[in-house]
Image 1 (cartoon, rainbow, N blue to C red):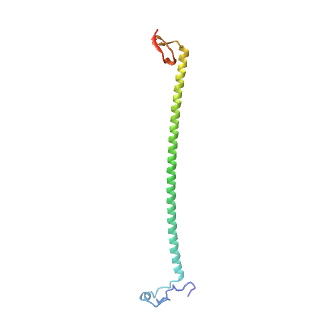
Image 2: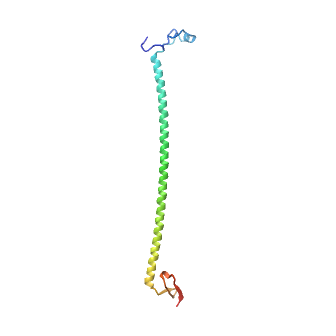
Image 3: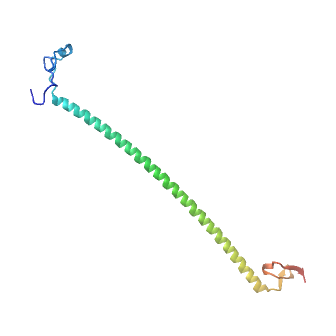
Length: 146
């Protein structure tokens, strides 16, 4: 008997080391001996299969978690970018409106100054008639004909 073969051996006569031959053991008379080495290989293969399955399951779970985390991060980044773009556009529109209002006011003041200097404070020609002017741009003007 080999050093690696012990209680797991099945002998050619169908008997086992720990008991008498049974009817099923007698049917196995022509089978070869199953050594502990063969049993160890089978156990090792089963263990390797279990380890491979566990590793595959863990890898799949990790990949799914990473994909979900990346998707959440992408959604958050997209939302932040959209909010920043909306705020920047709103500020730009507000600045443009304020600049347009300031430009309009500056043009109005410039026109008022030109009218005041060129036409003079006393008379302004309106439809061929002279009218008396009191304030800038005809505010509070007395439109009575003279």
